[in-house]
Image 1 (cartoon, rainbow, N blue to C red):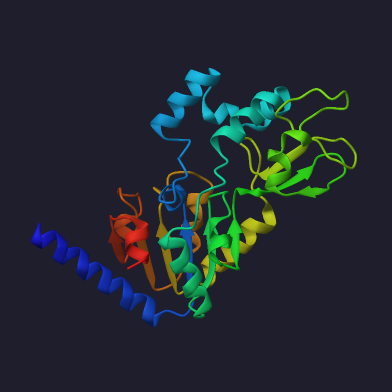
Image 2 (image 1 turned 180 degrees about the vertical axis):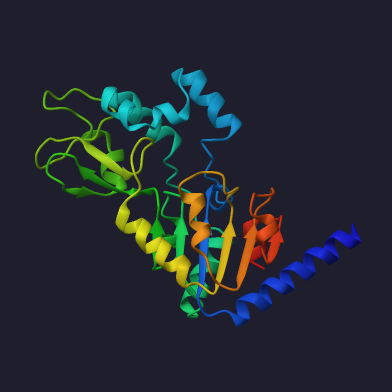
Length: 257
């Protein structure tokens, strides 16, 4: 046990040295960053079981664009009850990254998460590859709405006053869709380009809370040409052998130290 604690301490010191000498850090994060704030990973075994038990379908099917079009009420039922966690707060990882940006060390955060916790922590330059639950837009007129709007039952009544889970636009009556990338949808090209540009310009890339197996997002690491690649994840990743430093610990514990 003493040896393990000593090794971890050395890793933390090495990470601090890397950060101190870096001036263009980019952080690339996945679901593990948000789970430490209490946001469940719907891809987990428990999430899969719950989807099968309650809806008779996999999360991937329920969150696909074709299912959204074919059964909007069930889609929003699942979406609101399994992807929206309004009481969660940024954890130490989110706060540490926001502080690095304030210090002029961090160029950008690139995230696969859709919860908006990086912005809530104070980060300004955040490229959300899969969109955000905080933004929603009318599919008919393009009007934008916040999360409170789509969660309010009063905004989920059709033209005849029938209650459902589907939010409708107050301006034109169109369906309000979450500004998130569903399965079968392409990533936003502008966001993707900005993420690639940030990673390509970074002198240090810190990857945290992701197993780097979900594509196309995981492929962004291949654009990194800088000096230090740091991987922080509880389990191993396909890129561990290519990294300057690998820490198999909690992302909040590591960055919040």
